[in-house]
Image (cartoon, rainbow, N blue to C red):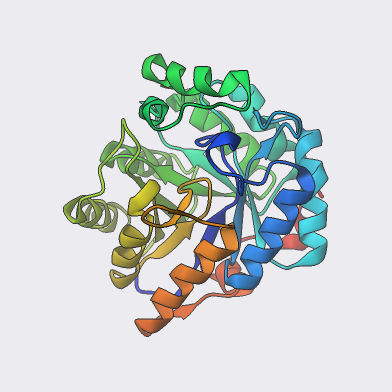
Length: 309
């Protein structure tokens, strides 16, 4: 997998972080749309989208919450729109699947395995919570399994794939790459795979440079030239891991879902600020940034005219 262009994905607002931790996390449909459009203008070819309850910021997979911003983003820019099927570890698989099934996006995220998904360590860093659910949500992750069984994965692949949706295949550990290879062998996944290696989540692979190399080396062995590789890293590791991966020929994902920070001790003021930072780094290294249509071509997406929003 050798790329002339680097695809920047921006994860706009996710289920990992809570509103109290930063005043800059978009919560309402209007805020999410504005952040997505600005991230695209800064250089993101793909915007990865979750939704939140506009009243208390709680993660939600209610399609009505997605409807608030999907059409607006599509009307205002040509970014590839990526809808989560991960939602939140507290949700059922059926609940998580609803938006991608209804709106038939060009691409949807899909986790490749059940795992411990620990965010409880954030409790020690914050004391004043805006909403009652927030601290309980983080504390519960110490005894919570994020369910993604083989049967769950196959069902999502069959249902969403039937609509022409392709997948951001989220791999939090080496075994997840082997699971993706298994579904490729079963022909439930079609090449080119878009492998998103995730680093730094408690319960998954770490962020050491050797971890990044191991992920890439294993994916090369399993998929050869039948995949595109991208990375995300949690928290303060975001920019370093993204830069390493890009120098190895990969694509990158940034955004407030994965990290609230721009520099040590400095919160990012927006998703676009993170996109602009990684773009500046990549271009200073002589790398070129992919446009949305170049990303569509690399990933063989169906195009925005064939979505259901």
